[in-house]
Length: 198
Ligand SMILES: Cc1cc2nc3c(=O)[nH]c(=O)nc-3n(C[C@H](O)[C@H](O)[C@H](O)COP(=O)(O)O)c2cc1C
Image 1: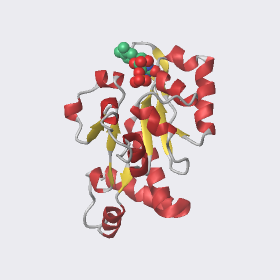
Image 2: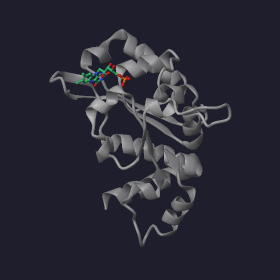
Image 3: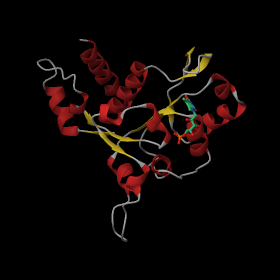
Image 4: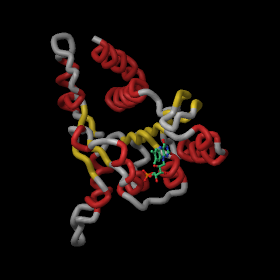
């Protein structure tokens, strides 16, 4: 996700007259998917660039852009949602065997990386999950905690991904901090939230 600084300033100036509901005015999004995640959604229903593992391997010669490096340079914020147990384990152990985990491995630690875990309750309650989440927060990544509810597998309990509203709120919080630093960020966050609510 990359912030559009010019557009953001425009948005701030015109805040009273025009409250954009189109979030592409505020930031650009590029979506990186794992092979298995494609099972869960229709790529045609998503109106942003989607990168898959194959796109990484269009590289030919020394000096050609390397996709996972280009994407991490381009992005101001990275958000992994949902973060499943498999990719959590890979990231916690430094593995990088696909485009997504290569971006994470090459991520500039000074930029925010947010993650929203989602998994079956017993996966969540496994002792290794807590250790791996702590490893990620120890890297400085920001957890958007999962919640308890009825899961896709019909189990009821912890492990569901946080609500979209919660995730957006957290992203907005970090955008505001990036734009204005911590104190002014709080004000911007309120403005952005109000624009969503009206
Ligand atoms: C229908 C279905 C739903 C799944 N839901 C989850 C889930 O919510 N969380 C999770 O950690 N794994 C889930 N899995 C297992 C992952 O899809 C599996 O570990 C997969 O290899 C993850 O690949 P990836 O991390 O490369 O995307 C599910 C599998 C299936 C078949």
